[in-house]
Amino acid sequence: MNDINLLKEDLEKRGIKPSLIRIKVYEYLKKHRTHPTAEEVYLNLSKEIPTLSKTSVYNTLSLFVEKGLVQMLTIEENIARFDADTSVHGHFQCKVCCKIYDFLVEKESIQSYLDKNFDVEEIYVYYKGVCPYCKNKSLS
Image (cartoon, rainbow, N blue to C red):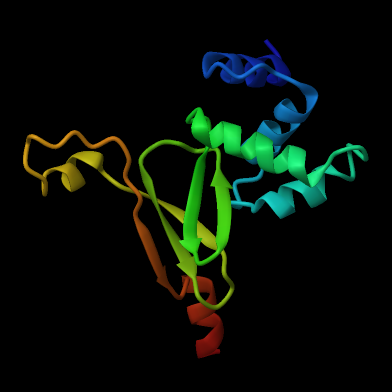
């Protein structure tokens, strides 16, 4: 099975009808693990699909979030970023270069702080600081 068929299958599993735009947006998110904004997705895909509209990208991303196919990150004020990795993990944003890094989070360790009567459905862990690259650069 080729990559496009796998992408279509992922969409269909979530009850999303595969269209060219939906497949391309999802493919972009899967290939570019940079936590892009809707604007970044639009700017990059519009080179390949000249008829693409910003509205289509925003609506597609909104549908993906609603169906649990991708997660929306709100680590920055007034900026939504998107991540195709929906596993439980945290995000670290460097205050110097603004790059966002993924890191592992154990759901069980977070859930252990809660009473057993709570059912955890979503976990968002955000850290901000200076990444090792920028830290080393400032020491030079």
